[in-house]
Length: 251
Image (cartoon, rainbow, N blue to C red):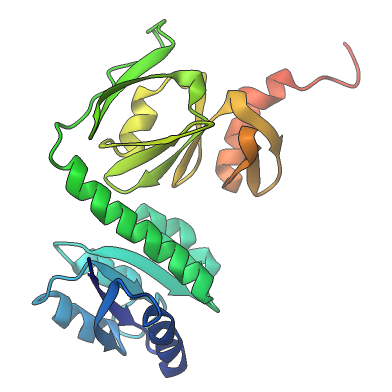
């Protein structure tokens, strides 16, 4: 199986480097290499592409504006020198965000994620849209969800964290992972907030599995590690952690 892709970058050296990396991945078919967003937009209006590897800061039409302008959006992997664009890119449902210089290992990781997404979407789009139908008033400690092999029952506390994959989400347990056709946004509304907390545009964690919290990351049971934004970290501290911290002085 091959997957079509497009490269967009206004810097010739960067374009060549990305093309060199992508040519090492046998499953990719490079449709075109574009020097600006307008050129890429014209190609994407006539050709169906699976994955776009795009710079963000480009003249006339930025990578962000390119993504917004496409009706039938391919998967976007942004490759940029500016890390401050990360939050906005995930708001636009970009699949991944790579800070230059982009190594082959990092591009390969993003590509494998994109291919997994494409294949899972093919399978899950054949299934009915899932609705967990749970809230904080529900005393059950489990939920059901549909996956390709059937309907699965899972206890809330068995879920360590959840990663967004655009239209659907990947649930990680200590020994397995499950993909369901529910976006992270809709999962956040349905999962009990006393157990689950949004820590990043792409991640929800089970607070019962927190091992260590740093300024930028959450270390979870079974050596899982996820990023945390400054705003979400503060909310997590105020809502859950501060209440459990042992005080140095008693009133």
